[in-house]
Image (cartoon, rainbow, N blue to C red; front, side, top):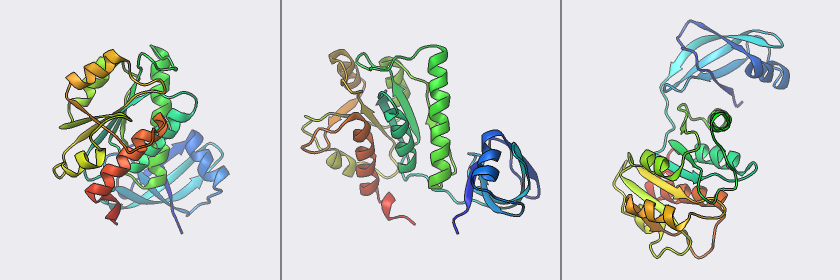
Length: 249
């Protein structure tokens, strides 16, 4: 039986108890209909996970008892940062969700010159909080015990600055002459990678020039033009497959 995995930002310790409230408690008790004694897995993003049981439940509050710690990690072989042009509608939610499932360590939403979605100020922070919740839910589902970093929407200069911590930086373009698979095969073990994907309208000429001047190398993903919500996911899959991540159990 697959155990329910629950994220909490609270400290976890063997022998202790953890209160859960709000939507988390409601999901466990009203949606999943778990009762007292039901086994759970708790994690707080600090690494590893904890075996726990539901000790008491109510409509808006539940208490879990923590029993044992498992140091298991399910992170990718190499850190991958995705600089993603903000997609419209719920496509950005899908990108964040799937990047998390595939092992990305950071997602930087790019508020590009041709982005359809505009965010600023409080709206930007609300977007970040929403996408972080999407990433947490994806971690609960896929088994990751560390939450990827999700940035607030950033303009091109700040987004590129955030990607500089990565040793290799790739700009995904449909007409690039260098295949991503070829570049990925040349990566050293555990070498960090940043992938830059433009929004629906693509990067502007000025943004592209900034990226190339900042050390990004143009790479392609085959003969077909992929949508913005597909490109990063395909690219991560290529990199992970070559690195051997999909062969790990």
